[in-house]
Image 1: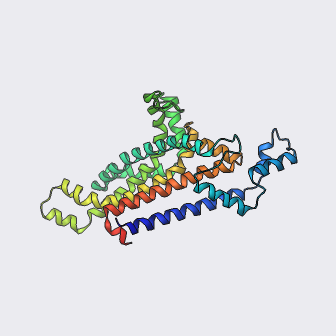
Image 2 (image 1 turned 180 degrees about the vertical axis):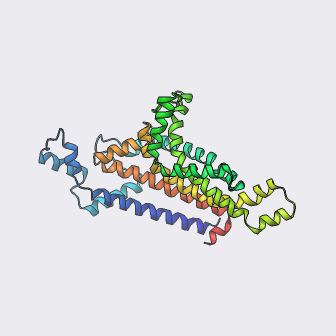
Image 3 (image 1 turned 45 degrees about the vertical axis):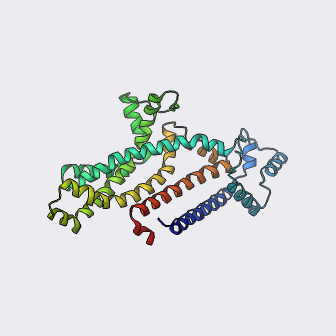
Length: 318
């Protein structure tokens, strides 16, 4: 992997991060409503205009939008995401506390998606048109059509309330009770991974069928190579490249898709402060969480590109 290629990809990722930051900043400032007035409103009673003006000045909302934007970018470059407008808690501290829980949920869902989607896709391709292929294709179509919060609700009703096999939701630190922690993680991880498993199944199946139809597979068979060697060395090596790309994109998508899952299962990740911040017009908290999700998405895609460049050096020529 050349340093020039890596520097170019890194520059593109940093440029996209700046674009996302700018869009988020402008979008939130265009939302109707005065944050200072909203923070001072209690019980539907309008706050004192003098108090609103004082709070606006304290928060820097009286400054021109361009000046606020400059201060915003300067804070980002210094690693300062500001303080919550609601409780004056540092945004970075809140994200540092909750982000590992969201990443744990995403990682668990990804492992479930890979463990289910890739092997079943390979098996369906090797037995194209068979009973398993037809049933699995129908199930994946259903999984893709059903929203994640519906799947989460059904899992709670079936596994927690009806069969009483798993807890309905909540959180216990792993260091406190590892077994209970894993139990509480299981259902939300299944809800997160169901869509990924369906997508990986379809992509793996299609890539395998395409690879099996290539001339080099027929040549390998003509040379007398075993079916297992042909599958591992020639077919899977080429078929899994597009699957890797889809996996990277979907892992980034899961960062946004976990919000509803965390809400359904009461998993204390980034969703709770994000929803609370949106409702309270807590701009620093909203911007901090959205930027964190966006940067992680860009980082995942950059890592996937690097992995592709290592596996297939021809990528660097593109």
